Amino acid sequence: MSLRLARGEMVGLIGPNGAGETTLFNLISGNLKPTSGEIRIAGRDASQDRPKQRIRLGVGRTFQILRPFTPSSLSQNSVAQV
Image (tube, rainbow, N blue to C red; front, side):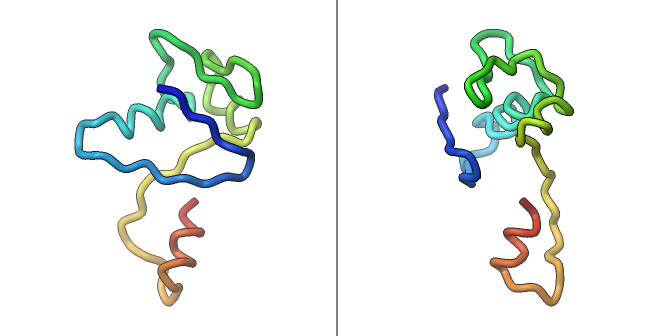
């Protein structure tokens, strides 16, 4: 797979259960190391970097929060969880 994002860009990833979305997020965030290919961040190979190192590069992940923050709006909840 090839994916290119601009600094500060936010995108969503959707797919059916078992399509690999969580695996992709784990690879990008460093929670899983690739068995082939590379993960490039800011032009450098970060494939072997740990999650802590990737956070310093501005890449991290959050986990689903199933309850909204009240009394915030839907858009405020979306931004708060990023």
